[in-house]
Length: 112
Ligand code: AMP
Image (cartoon, rainbow, N blue to C red; front, side, top):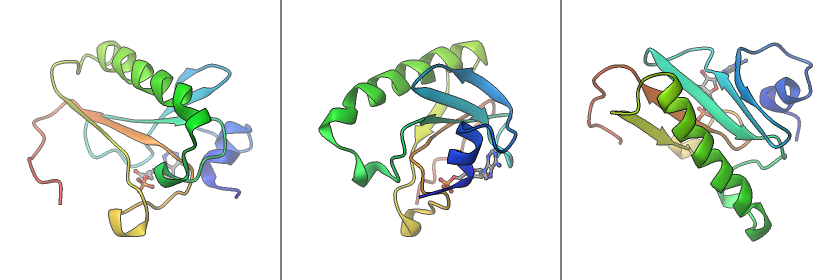
Protein backbone atom coordinates (compact mmCIF):
# COMPACT_ATOMS: atom_id res chain seq x y z
CA UNK A 1 0.00 0.00 0.00
CA UNK A 2 1.28 3.48 -0.83
CA UNK A 3 1.21 5.82 2.17
CA UNK A 4 2.63 9.22 3.06
CA UNK A 5 5.45 7.44 4.86
CA UNK A 6 6.30 5.12 1.96
CA UNK A 7 6.52 8.23 -0.23
CA UNK A 8 8.83 9.89 2.31
CA UNK A 9 10.95 6.72 2.41
CA UNK A 10 11.19 6.75 -1.39
CA UNK A 11 12.11 10.44 -1.41
CA UNK A 12 8.89 11.50 -3.13
CA UNK A 13 7.77 13.68 -0.20
CA UNK A 14 9.92 15.87 2.08
CA UNK A 15 10.42 15.24 5.78
CA UNK A 16 12.76 16.34 8.53
CA UNK A 17 14.92 13.25 8.93
CA UNK A 18 16.70 12.70 12.24
CA UNK A 19 18.01 9.18 11.59
CA UNK A 20 18.34 7.00 8.53
CA UNK A 21 20.06 3.79 7.56
CA UNK A 22 19.29 1.06 5.04
CA UNK A 23 16.43 -0.34 7.11
CA UNK A 24 15.10 2.39 9.41
CA UNK A 25 13.95 6.00 9.02
CA UNK A 26 13.14 8.48 11.78
CA UNK A 27 11.49 11.83 11.07
CA UNK A 28 10.02 14.68 13.06
CA UNK A 29 6.23 14.50 13.33
CA UNK A 30 4.58 17.18 11.22
CA UNK A 31 2.09 17.96 14.00
CA UNK A 32 4.07 17.45 17.22
CA UNK A 33 2.17 16.92 20.48
CA UNK A 34 5.28 17.67 22.55
CA UNK A 35 8.61 19.47 22.08
CA UNK A 36 10.11 16.15 20.97
CA UNK A 37 7.88 14.06 18.70
CA UNK A 38 9.72 11.70 16.41
CA UNK A 39 8.35 8.90 14.27
CA UNK A 40 10.56 5.84 13.87
CA UNK A 41 9.66 3.35 11.15
CA UNK A 42 11.02 0.44 9.18
CA UNK A 43 11.58 1.17 5.52
CA UNK A 44 9.94 -2.19 4.78
CA UNK A 45 6.29 -1.85 3.94
CA UNK A 46 4.58 -3.22 7.07
CA UNK A 47 1.12 -1.70 7.61
CA UNK A 48 0.87 -2.13 11.37
CA UNK A 49 2.01 -4.18 14.34
CA UNK A 50 -0.57 -6.88 13.60
CA UNK A 51 1.07 -7.44 10.22
CA UNK A 52 4.46 -8.08 11.74
CA UNK A 53 6.07 -11.44 10.89
CA UNK A 54 8.74 -13.29 12.81
CA UNK A 55 11.28 -12.41 10.12
CA UNK A 56 10.67 -8.72 10.95
CA UNK A 57 11.81 -9.02 14.56
CA UNK A 58 15.35 -7.72 13.86
CA UNK A 59 13.74 -4.52 12.58
CA UNK A 60 11.92 -4.08 15.89
CA UNK A 61 15.13 -4.62 17.82
CA UNK A 62 16.83 -1.98 15.74
CA UNK A 63 13.91 0.45 16.07
CA UNK A 64 14.09 0.19 19.87
CA UNK A 65 17.82 0.89 19.81
CA UNK A 66 17.26 3.87 17.51
CA UNK A 67 14.61 5.14 19.95
CA UNK A 68 17.08 4.89 22.82
CA UNK A 69 19.75 6.69 20.83
CA UNK A 70 17.39 9.48 19.69
CA UNK A 71 16.00 9.91 23.23
CA UNK A 72 19.53 10.65 24.37
CA UNK A 73 20.33 12.84 21.39
CA UNK A 74 17.19 14.93 21.97
CA UNK A 75 17.82 14.98 25.74
CA UNK A 76 14.59 13.28 26.80
CA UNK A 77 16.15 10.06 28.09
CA UNK A 78 14.77 10.71 31.58
CA UNK A 79 11.16 10.78 30.44
CA UNK A 80 9.55 9.85 27.18
CA UNK A 81 6.79 7.72 25.75
CA UNK A 82 7.33 5.22 22.96
CA UNK A 83 4.26 3.74 21.34
CA UNK A 84 2.52 2.58 18.23
CA UNK A 85 -1.13 2.93 17.34
CA UNK A 86 -2.48 -0.25 15.81
CA UNK A 87 -5.65 0.17 13.77
CA UNK A 88 -8.27 2.91 13.44
CA UNK A 89 -9.77 2.31 16.90
CA UNK A 90 -6.37 3.10 18.39
CA UNK A 91 -6.05 6.24 16.28
CA UNK A 92 -3.76 4.92 13.56
CA UNK A 93 -4.08 7.21 10.56
CA UNK A 94 -1.10 6.18 8.42
CA UNK A 95 -0.89 2.49 7.65
CA UNK A 96 2.84 2.09 7.59
CA UNK A 97 4.17 0.78 10.91
CA UNK A 98 5.69 3.60 12.95
CA UNK A 99 6.51 4.30 16.58
CA UNK A 100 6.00 7.66 18.26
CA UNK A 101 8.83 8.91 20.49
CA UNK A 102 7.28 11.68 22.56
CA UNK A 103 8.89 13.78 25.27
CA UNK A 104 10.27 17.11 26.34
CA UNK A 105 7.41 18.02 28.66
CA UNK A 106 5.46 16.52 31.56
CA UNK A 107 3.25 13.94 29.88
CA UNK A 108 -0.21 13.29 31.23
CA UNK A 109 -0.99 9.80 32.45
CA UNK A 110 -3.98 9.29 30.21
CA UNK A 111 -3.43 6.64 27.58
CA UNK A 112 -7.05 5.83 26.80
P1 AMP B 1 -0.79 7.65 13.70
O1 AMP B 1 -2.02 8.46 13.96
O2 AMP B 1 -0.32 6.82 14.85
O3 AMP B 1 -0.95 6.82 12.42
O4 AMP B 1 0.38 8.69 13.47
C1 AMP B 1 0.55 9.39 12.27
C2 AMP B 1 1.39 10.58 12.59
O5 AMP B 1 1.96 11.06 11.39
C3 AMP B 1 0.64 11.76 13.22
O6 AMP B 1 1.21 12.09 14.48
C4 AMP B 1 0.80 12.88 12.20
O7 AMP B 1 0.97 14.13 12.83
C5 AMP B 1 2.05 12.45 11.46
N1 AMP B 1 2.19 12.93 10.09
C6 AMP B 1 1.23 13.00 9.14
N2 AMP B 1 1.77 13.41 7.97
C7 AMP B 1 3.09 13.59 8.19
C8 AMP B 1 4.19 14.02 7.39
N3 AMP B 1 4.02 14.33 6.10
N4 AMP B 1 5.40 14.10 7.96
C9 AMP B 1 5.58 13.79 9.27
N5 AMP B 1 4.58 13.38 10.08
C10 AMP B 1 3.35 13.28 9.56
